Length: 507
Image (cartoon, rainbow, N blue to C red; front, side):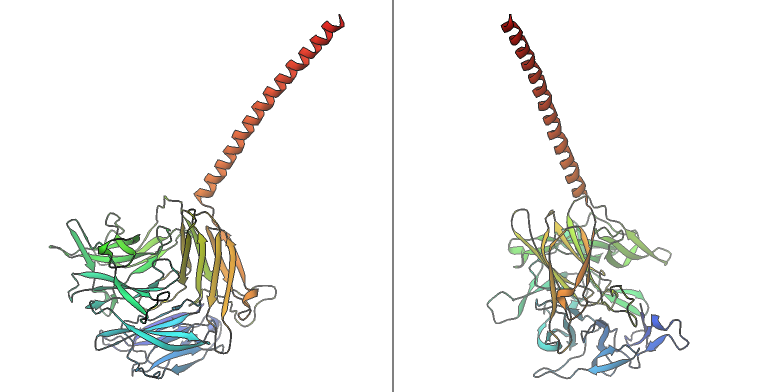
């Protein structure tokens, strides 16, 4: 593993310019410098993507003089820069600060695309650069909702479980951030319309009784670093719909206390839903922290498929503490964890060993299953789609299956592919629930030869099923034994009667 280090490029605390150094693990034992230094100065934190489909991470960003480019890394510990040019009929705008771009499948073909978020004169655009024959090609762009005066970091997630990636955008309706809102963009993939999609305002219970909360406009972590409002995504209750984790502030009179809350993804019907079938419900009764939270994220601490919460807090004495909150999950929902590795080895892989590599950026997975009621259950996710400004995404893709102990009918996995190559997509059928699957896409250009390793985590439902099965077998065994015992008694009586009848007949 290598380590990417970003340093401030100057002494101006308000500046976002950074210098990038990469500490190469392969150079540790060598005499020369272990650092690979990027000569160019970045205007803001770069995003980690796989822009050329070689399964080796690259950097997407903008130089301090306004040139947008892709920093491609090579096997000989060097790099080259490919600068973007204005596509036909479109003028490239400066990338938004803070960096908000994402590398994931946007059009449902299981191949990672690029959503570059730019900003000019306060107007934010989401540029869709779709992978066409191995090349990220500008296709169209959409504008952020005009109702938002303050815009946070977008999250890209299949929010309503229909194999279509949504853009979840938190923000404020006023400059002081006393009125918050969450907008969601839905792609018109299956609708007969001339537009690419539509923005909907999600219903969120920012007000509950006498309590009213709002997003924090920006979180000042240090004197030189501020973090934007962010929704971190994960299926906390494993019901099949991803939930969110956020830091909110009280907007009422008195001191404005900040707290970390879980926002559950619930169904919604009625005029207050804004035309979208899902909503976010803030769990005010679940307090997650003891002091002032600064950064929060989901993580599976015990590797059991149940998400926990990790948060960084500032204590009363000004010190920072990292706290982990283990979820006491009392339900018995099933899950599916999918991890795709890069299948890269340093120099040559040992004979007889499969190339594993590490968690790759950009792979996409989607599943299809059936609920106990006979309905369809589907979902889609991408692995490590964002990296800048403490994205803190899960290093795998987690799908909640709800109260569905059935086999997952189909699991599809796709990875980026370079120019001149065909798509890299493969599927597996009848996957056991409550399992972690490691996808080994080797060889890269032969999806039919890809392998997967499956690690099953038995749930309480499996134990209950086993106990029920044993109990049923024991009950049936007792009945069989009783019937057998009664039959033997009846046989003895009949033999005794036959013996007596023969004796009296003989007389």
